[in-house]
Length: 116
Image (cartoon, rainbow, N blue to C red):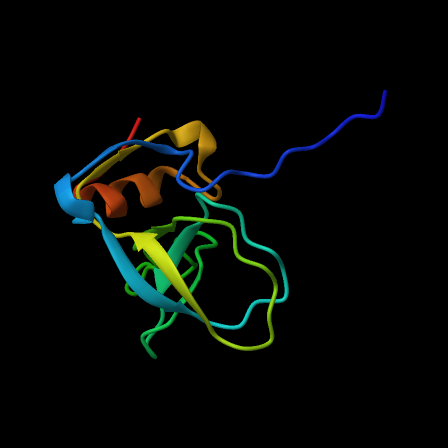
């Protein structure tokens, strides 16, 4: 019997969120050459588009912050895509998040997103 690898499921990482979908936002994801899984940490670029969070960066005076979490899987695309993100007031399962580190936990905590 072959091994089947299941992808991340939409919102599988959410333990709880604010009533009325207040935790979610519609957003724009910059073009990406790779498929992104639900639970991927994102950072908001200067152009108002989200990109993959890849750590705090090397400049301590201008750290890169984790600003949101991708709600569902997104295919690779050479064009910008509409997405949904968890941007505030939620409790998330840390083991199901992609790219989480200590600085990301702090940045998300400032938005009311608790990583368990």
